[in-house]
Image (tube, rainbow, N blue to C red):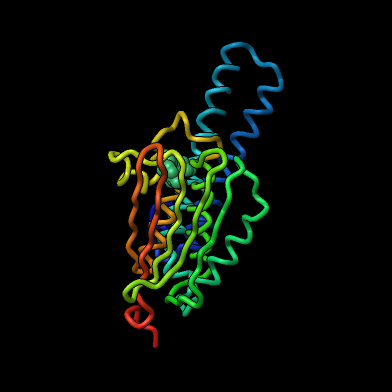
Length: 236
Ligand code: ADP
């Protein structure tokens, strides 16, 4: 299997389907079989063994999800085309999708300069922005405000998402961009994955952008992404 994995590593898609086929399928079967065995009301010792199998099987499944996500990111550049994108429009459209959200009575405000253009991929930029906005809601406070803005600043296109939420402690400011790192696992709302910001950073890097984070605990955070100007990004 290893050789096959190595051989196909160049193609993200092939690798993904291989992982699904070689690993996901057998684990699903193992989980289903042990589930069935448990339904048969086995003796105590066997029950314990099956429960361990179930627990570990679910763990492997979760690990596979992470692995697949990771591989998809590694192959971003291969899969997604980079072209001229109207970042202002991406921001306006994405913010509109959140208008119906009533989470903690938080208001979302968009301040967009018109027609700010960069070289990039609109789908990925939407993912990047959504992840930042979802976090701003998650770590925001009751009656808070989220400000999303896009503007041109000395030749750069600057996208920023600000919240007046819980903030990020200085010792966590680098680490929160790491794979599966959560600053406050106990207070993190349900449904957190620990890779939202990793994805944000991967997408920013693919766009040749710089990420900045200003934050104060108890006051809020501003995630800022500086994209190179269109000409500097080398668009024909
Ligand atoms: P998660 O699924 O846990 O939100 P992320 O990768 O998106 O994973 O974020 C990593 C960690 O960074 C979070 O667990 C949280 O501690 C912190 N974080 C992210 N966004 C914010 C924010 N806007 N305000 C405060 N903390 C944040």
